Amino acid sequence: MNIEATKLEPAVVLKVSGRMDAANAGTFQRSCEEWIAKGSTRLVLDLSELEYVSSMGLSCFLVVAKALQAKSGSLILCHLRGLPKQVFEMTHLLKLFPVFDSPDEALRSFK
Amino acid sequence: MMPDCIVCRTFPAQTAQLASCFDFVHAGANAAKLDGEDINKLDLVLEELFTNLARYAYEQPDSGDVEVAYKVEAPGRMLVQISDSGRDFNPLASDPPDFSRGLADRPVGGLGIFLVKSIAESISYERNAGRNTISFRFCGSGRHVNDSP
Image 1: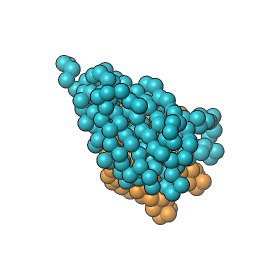
Image 2 (image 1 turned 120 degrees about the vertical axis):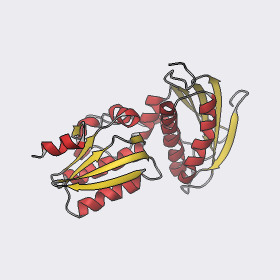
Image 3 (image 1 turned 45 degrees about the vertical axis):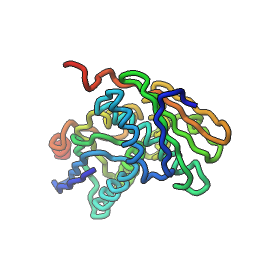
């Protein structure tokens, strides 16, 4: 799994690529929590190159989303596709997150 | 026990062994001509069962062994068994998640076994001679790697 962060006011875009499994999901959660600790309340996830996510990854998405909600912020999902999209659909999680086709679209929604 | 033509390997019941477990079962997935997307789905079922076992099967987490066995039944179809000698526990008996809750009230866990049940074609649990055994059948989408376009 690779995570690239880009600060694009008023949000941070995190591009998460590869496989998010039990071995590395915590890295994703810590990366998000570091941005929250710096004051970011809108995290936009570009998931166009995320190939795999297991329940450990889903738990981390939920932990981060709850932390942001408590600060009146949000965890925003963009470009979900393939197996990760199916996994979010199967577990009825999509209704708990703002979902956009692209990070640009998500950023435009803040204006 | 599984019938003939099985391939079997024992791993330490540790989450860190997951990659080795994937590699082992991928040999069968390739023989079954599963494509990459189906292999990811198979990995998901394996990961959920393997990590569940690594955490909960034994008194001390990440101790004991797990035996993984598979059989290629036909192109696109595999039978997989995962067994341990830990405490008597049927993970398939867990309650389904409550999807009606909003974000603030939604538990962050409890989705793994639900995913397993959703993806596996069939799945069963048995306790026999001091061992827990979960058997599941995985069927690919029908897109085999050698299929003509």
